[in-house]
Image 1 (tube, rainbow, N blue to C red):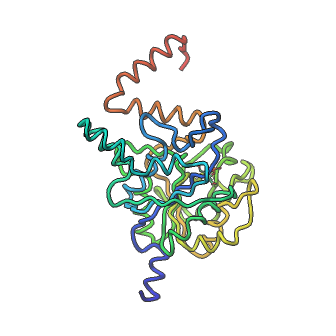
Image 2 (tube, rainbow, N blue to C red):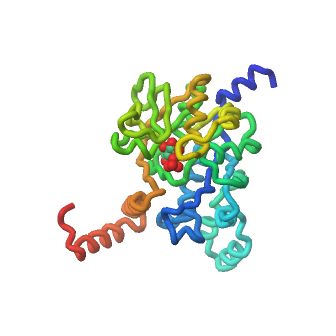
Image 3 (cartoon, rainbow, N blue to C red):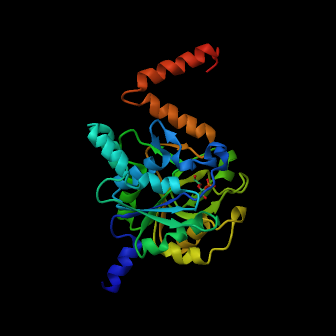
Length: 310
Ligand code: G1P
């Protein structure tokens, strides 16, 4: 490889192939369920949250999935492992449809790699744990809590990968939020924002509404230059005493272009109770088999509870 092509690869002159899923969080908001079931395994209809993020990464062209877990997350690794006995039973029983579902958790040609984050030092630290697997190429980060529904259209990461390739840049997903909510998100300021994108000039983690540079909030999808790893190595603890990915990105954008991208789709914050409920309702109402029944039971529930003021 010449030095020119090394630079091109670092900057993103090809489609991303690798995706990082930080899944080492404790999920305390969903206790007691998350006492034994990792929050990434909570289902929306019949798929665990993590599967939605994995499908999105695969659709965007990724074939290497890196899960950053902790020692309590065996269920995530088990889920992506081959289930020999189950597959044999389904095969013998002629249940081909179910067999396909089980096999397609990871389609052929896609591999899962597990990396342990020994201490919960923050999102930036979790991403840094994936460095040995990612190496020197641009990569994606997907936070499975953020479920993005695109109703059969291209997934959010796929949309971002197009922009990353076209601009030879890192790309971060954003959505507009109420000013009162800035304290829950990374917030970006951009040079100019036309259509769906703008080059980021500043990014700050969870600013108070009075000091937030805008109301454009980071959603859990990133395409990053591998340069981020060098920066994460020296990023000190920030908001909440954690090593923040946002702080390393704030350094990155001084050296390299980083774009904010307002994706087409709806994001559900499944890290919160109401987000998980909202996602379940939306997927149920849009489900090819369940939609009529879902509508009916929702109507019944509203009627029986006497809810009239919607
Ligand atoms: C993380 C990021 C934050 C981002 C958010 C999106 O925060 O640090 O910048 O806006 O994800 O979901 P968390 O929600 O993990 O505290």
